[in-house]
Length: 127
Image (cartoon, rainbow, N blue to C red):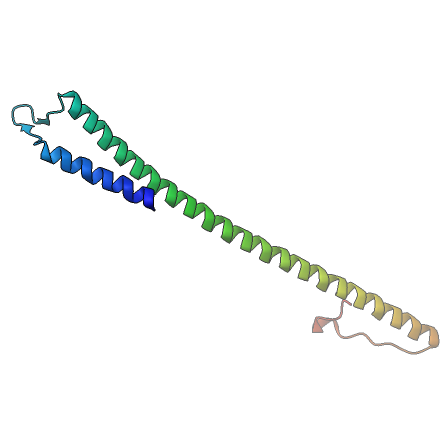
């Protein structure tokens, strides 16, 4: 922030110096007189200061945008990875439950017990 303030202070000082020099507008040519080498140097300094300020502002906006975008992207990726892990765990639990159910049904059938499956419309009939 100190560099930003110094650049701004430099721009104000250059403008005050230019105004103090008494820039005059040529009414016949309708342009600012920069004919002297000191005037050209002042113009160059003012343009440089302006471009530095604009560049600094643009860089700050872009850096902030990239930081926010990366933070949001990594958070979404972490959430998706967590959901994939949970889905995998649920799938493994379901497969284990189906295997255990079939194992119990097979043991019951071997002993001579009758098993009854849930109705297909209940949503659990495909176990």
